[in-house]
Length: 424
Ligand SMILES: Cc1cc2nc3c(=O)[nH]c(=O)nc-3n(C[C@H](O)[C@H](O)[C@H](O)COP(=O)(O)OP(=O)(O)OC[C@H]3O[C@@H](n4cnc5c(N)ncnc54)[C@H](O)[C@@H]3O)c2cc1C
Image (cartoon, rainbow, N blue to C red; front, side, top):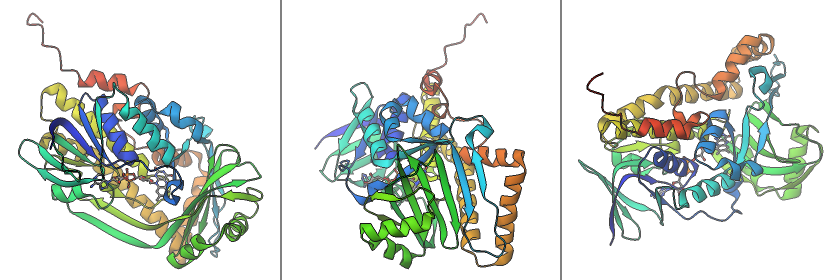
């Protein structure tokens, strides 16, 4: 049995967890990353991609992973919304372009598997300050007065002053911290795949607003796109079970020729739509990140962007604690972290919920309000620019790792303040 002690331990090997380990190391902490083995590509669930906005891309640059991720990813230059609800009052087609807000792209569509591979490679680099523990799982998480004790399924014990729980929606860390949640389900599921097509996507992500939920294509490099097709659970199950030929035909019909003929499709994965939010994001030396803290339906590309903002915020709080000689897992650090995340997470969950419910509602006034909202966004350029900026990231001061050259900024913040010159 080994017993080793760290400033921080991260539990979870998804994108949020590995990103958090890299962020904490940049903040000056020595970090244990306890992660299950990264499976080789080929599982249907790995066909997920994430549209990541500018702050998230800066995060990846700051932790030295963007050059490995970029070749697998495609820029999103425009977002087109098409009303396909069949409602009496059809909203106009709205196109948001990145150049309206002075950007080359809103963000990049990044395959999940390539992203986690690149993050893990950076974590395993000899100069990373991260010890990667490949484990079947952490079995016990026991918060104490001065540290949290972790026990792995292999029987090893570790201690850390701060635990970053990024162990997904059924988080054991969250339970160990005694943090309650609010959770809910939607009568919808997303069918996810990537596919080839003959007509260029021209860097445009297209969202059809349909009565069962949105149907979204997002560009990938070349003549490929990813698909998030939201349906009622029964219909989603039927679609996911179709063979390749039948699924291609269904997809081609739904796209109405927008991307030409549909070629090879990857295996389909299905994700029931649900939501969850933790009552606090930190307590008892345990901080919650990614889906351990919040689950949001895959509408409007918010989930992992939030997860990376969690990682950047925790890194910032730990850097300040270390610089001031405070406890990185103490109540003050965790309260600052939780307060830093509450508004952003709450507002994204509320916005996505309203948008989704306005689509699936059969109530005419709700369709009218949604339609008028789109009319206003189409007609009023400043309103459109405001909506774009708010969708991309929250206003206000950003943590260093979400900004260009953030690693240097964070290292400066993590340095203890020089003693004052007594003559000054
Ligand atoms: C269809 C779909 C489309 C999406 N599109 C977007 C998008 O466009 N943009 C966007 O920003 N987000 C998007 N998301 C959201 C994004 O995929 C998630 O936010 C993100 O993958 C969550 O990462 P995570 O690391 O928090 O959780 P997970 O990926 O679930 O990782 C949790 C990790 O914890 C590990 N674990 C669990 N228990 C233990 C234990 N006891 N010990 C050790 N390890 C443990 C698991 O094995 C896993 O490695 C989408 C999601 C879906 C479903």
